[in-house]
Image 1 (cartoon, rainbow, N blue to C red):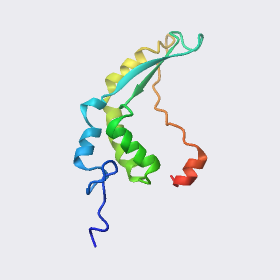
Image 2: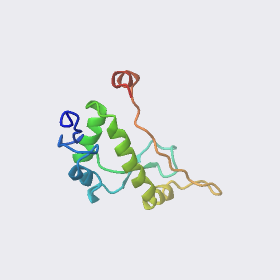
Image 3: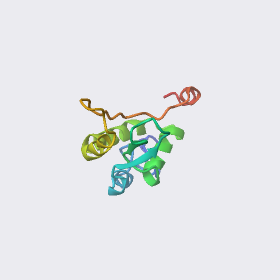
Image 4: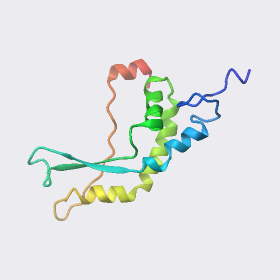
Length: 132
């Protein structure tokens, strides 16, 4: 009976006791997914430097991409907690990324620049279809 209830890795479908098998978990946490920062050009008069600094906690490719797709389209809501915990810890440890991004915003004298984490929007019909 326990074989019928065994959990499989959200990425590779191997049998595992967790959301991800040890190999996929290691790949999600690998050095290749270090925080990165890019700048996006904006129309004039938006920011003084005409750029908006943007940071990401990983590249949307390989194992991380497969994990996100499992959450979005594979009916694996358990991936949300596992990825949320991992990416949240990465966010807290990425102080150098936050400093680099906020330093480039060039706040007005006497004010502090702010750093925000923004969710990717989800259409209401997709949320209703998925249930989360």
